[in-house]
Length: 109
Image (cartoon, rainbow, N blue to C red; front, side, top):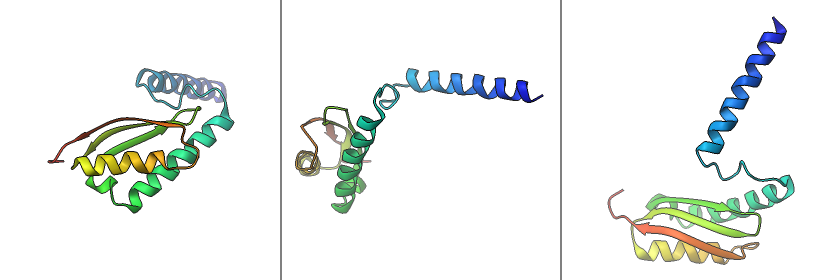
């Protein structure tokens, strides 16, 4: 009984892991746990600053940071000013080397 339960858990974990890779989860290909923690810290700093400026409530902004300190921003904001402010916040965050923005203006969220 225990063996079949363990085998079932492994099978589910394998399927879910494969689904995450297929879905393009940006965190599944991180080979270095230390780099991942650093990346998460930079991403969290940016998201905290965006929330403090209420920019995340003005649209839907997604932030991810790769192992080289490159920030990838995507989503929408209601004004070009909000887009520019979000990019500026990211650029001025400690640990950020560069910012790639795919943010667009969408007035009706």
